[in-house]
Length: 140
Image (tube, rainbow, N blue to C red; front, top):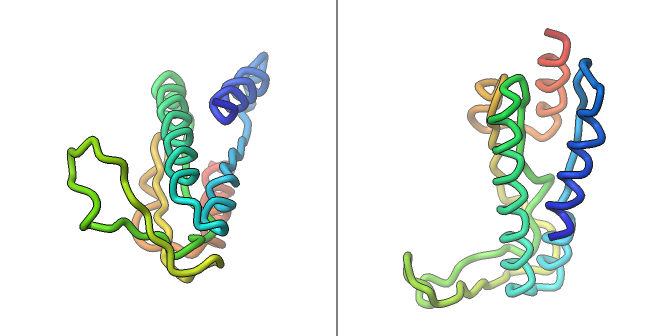
C-alpha cells in the first residue's frame, strides 16, 4: 500500500494551489528487485500493488482531463515468463512465473498512455523518445 499512499500524497501536495501544472514520476523499483532475485511470488504481489496504484492514477486523470499518464519500464529483468501448463485464464490458481536470468534482458517493454496527449505514445518507441515527447507536449 506504500506506493498508493506515496502517490496520493504526491498528487495532493503538487496540486495544492498550483495552476501551472506539475510533472510527477512514480517508480515501482521493487518489481525490478524481485526480477533480479527470481522471486515470482514477490513480483506478483508488487505487480498487484502497482495495478492498484495505476487504478488510483487513472481515477485522477479522469477527474483532471488535462493530465497525461504514461506508464513504462526502463527494462525487463529476469526473463520472466508465465508457465501455460500451470495457469488457466480465469482460474483462481496462483500464477507460476519462470525466469531465464537474474539480469536485465533486451525484451521490448510496453508504453501505455492515457489522457491528454496519449495519442503521441503509440507504436514501438525508444526510451529516449519518451521524454522528448513529454517535453514537446509541455511546450504546447
